[in-house]
Picture 1 (cartoon, one colour):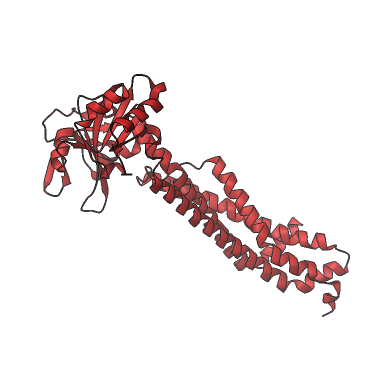
Picture 2 (cartoon, rainbow, N blue to C red):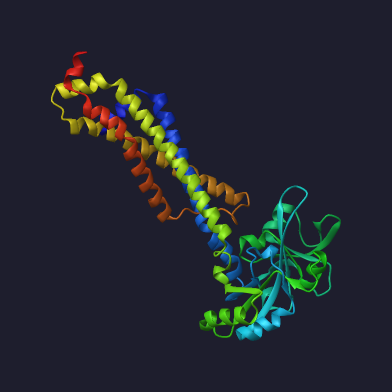
Length: 365
């Protein structure tokens, strides 16, 4: 059946190429969108979990750290309620530069254990009260900055780069760090932090500690740090929207295959009738149509998978790795292959109906 299907598709090279391209685009869109959406919560969670803190506390009713406002005076109360080893406030802002790029800015207490995540690669550490800044490795490369140069954070606010750090976290490495007090003054948040990260004496008491913080300070919301960003309903909406777009792209690919097969069968109706007349069964004739659909799906899927991999790798090189996963999980590939196979199978139905209903007598017309 496969040799016959190959010959049938080769006779209509332009149409076959267009169908393969349609399947490839749809499959690549599915892989890229769903891969990014599924990995986004984990990547956001890793940004907080990388600090070693088990619990994150933000303002109640606020989803994003850059919108949260927690009084610095609440930090010791949080530590006491949770029975924590330490609790440290962090200021988080995301600014848009004049060239349109975004720059994460972190304000960190230099005496806190959190400061240890900024591992210096060149230059020197920040000192309290300085107007200097540390720049992440990725940000230093993209902005062309090094120790001793200047970085404008807000318009008219140029600061000397004291050092370049690596945190082994793509999001953090794409930003800059200031001493907490200096960051609070810069953004008009004196006495406020965006987020409080908490290291417990006994991590097994995490659930109890979360309940105590919520009970004693109802204006705050506490959760496990690795789930902090993963719990955002905004991220759930992004994931659902991405999957919907990916599924729509797959549906379009299936419709392309269905259209091509329907036209092929319509043009070959007399040829199929001749095969019936010389003894081919309906099942055998229908098998050639299914083989054509399988070939289109296989070739298009292979091209689409390669295209998705190249796109994600290029995005990683371009500095988008905090938002797009550079690798494609095998589970996701299997899911996409299943959906593509199911869709193409359904797309073959109209052509199969025509093929099944073609009598041998049609060869005489």
